[in-house]
Structure formats: C-alpha cells, structure tokens
Length: 82
Image (tube, rainbow, N blue to C red; front, side, top):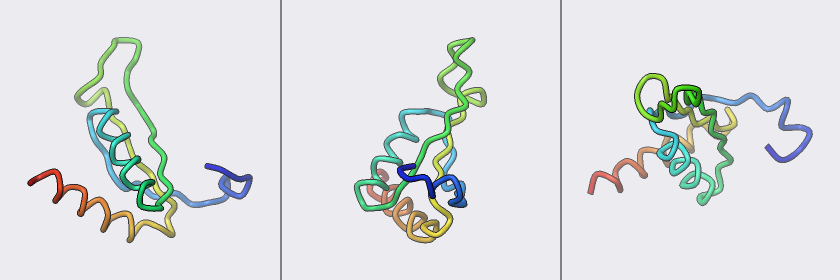
C-alpha cells in the first residue's frame, strides 16, 4: 500500500495457501504484471509452524483489480502445472 488513499481501498481475497513462500511467489507474480498485491500471514510463529492449518497465508488485491488478478492467478497455476 503506497499512498494515504490506500487505507480507503477495498481489498479482496484472491488466494489462500498453507505456505508463506507460495503466497509471496503469487504476490510477486501479480506485481510483476502490474497488479498490486499484499500478503497477510497468519503463521503461528510461537510454535514455529510453517505449514498446515496454523500457517495460513492470504493474498489480497484491490477489489477493482480482482478479475484481472484471478486471470493472472489461473495463468500462473497453468504455468506451474507444466
């Protein structure tokens, strides 16, 4: 979030994963294609859990960019499946 107007930007959940690194890769993929994205990590650092249900990471994008981000996410997932 870069400007003071960002605090008023509605954000939409795009992607949820059980690994922080994967959420960061998705964020980077989106940003390299011009879509702002942020990662909200819910990793349980007290117990050093980095995978599974106690290590959820979510990728959010501005609601106005959600449709484009969904298309890019599908593209990313197709590329990974190759």
